[in-house]
Length: 153
Image (cartoon, rainbow, N blue to C red; front, side):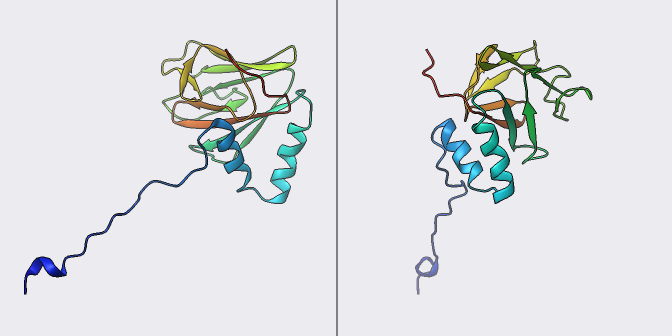
């Protein structure tokens, strides 16, 4: 008997199947994992008409944490006084800021060492839209707001 006859070959997929072919897909995937109470909190933000926003940690330490963004905006960084505290050396002390400008929320990099990314593209400043994925260091955050989606140019 040939020893190769008994050898089995199989293919194992090590990647997680994902519906997240777009930033909105990431948000839909995230929302599908929430219980009714957590989902209702996010639905309130989405119904706020753009007055409030929220950042959700989708990947990294403290996955599932939520941070409310109001008219005052929020700082993001490794400094203890940051509104969105991301405790890792890949994050600058004062990494980025989210500011409310008129009826939208803008993410601005504050000269960070590793940069700030939205939907896999490096940004210095960008108006955020619901479903945008923000990457700061090893953290992946999802942005949620009640504004209507507009086309970026």
